[in-house]
Each structure stands twice: as C-alpha cells, then as structure tokens.
Length: 197
Image (cartoon, rainbow, N blue to C red; front, side, top):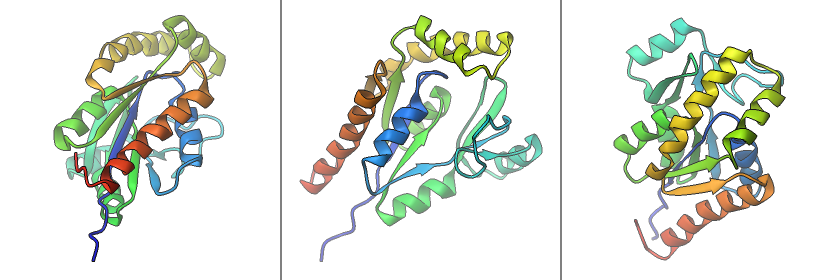
C-alpha cells in the first residue's frame, strides 16, 4: 500500500502592486490539487473583493482575539492594517495531501519559514519601482500618503527577495503565472520520484 502524499506549503510574496493576485489566480487555474489559503485582514475590502474568497475581513477586535488565542501561523502589521494566516486552515489542507498556496507579505513569509522550514518561498518582483508606482496609482483606491507608504515598504520587501527560494519577475502576467505553476509542479515530480526534500 502506498503512503498518501503529504501536501506542500508554498508561500507567495511581493510588494503591493507587483501583481501577485493576478499571477496566483492564473497559475491556480492551470493546476489541480492546490488550495489557496484565504488570509484574515483588518483592512476594508476593495471594490469587487468578497469576504471569505479574497480575504476574511475582520474587525480589529476579532483579529486581536484570534491572535491572543494563538490561532495564527503568521501575522503582521502591513501598511497600517493587520494580516494573518490561520494555522488550522493550513493544517487541514496539508493533512489531505493537497498543496496549499499562501499569498502573504515578507514579514509573514519569514515567520512561516521559521515555523515550517520545508515550505517553498516564491517572490514576485515588479519590473521596476517606477512601474510599481504606476500600478498603485492606476488602482485609484488609495490616498497619496498610503501610496507613499506602500512604495517605502516595497523597497524593503524587494531587499529581502534574496531570502526566497525563487524570484519571478512579473513583466508579463501570463509568463509569470506559467513560471509559478512550473515551480509547484516541479516539487510534485520530486515527490513522485521519492525525493523528499
């Protein structure tokens, strides 16, 4: 009898505006057996975002309660809002043998690496800071002060891309999403061949 394949944890990060969501969505459309982990956040939803699909939108009090009870695998304060991944969500998926993809910030990714060293960290890099600024302004959802904060944080995040296992430059979303899908598939091939690293 063959042992059930253990699921693998993939972590996707990159600056706000780098196109992580687009790359992730397109990659997951091409893959089966990969679940997306819906993070919790205290930030208000953007137009078109759905609670429980894009994020779990929580009050500050609800987030703090989960944090105090030790429910988060990782959590961070990013751009003035709290974000976190629930431990139970990740553990349930991995136990089924499916892979799970987290889309979280650099602070959170480094916490996950410390807790689960076998995770795979993937960084989505914008073509340039100028292009990143153009994308952020193009959203038309935030005031100047918050855009400036996101750009400041982006510089710090990009400096940490060397802490990741893979860096994908998102100058073309179709190509970048194929690259992400290929990375995930390559780990499945290793598992099938008996390489447990």
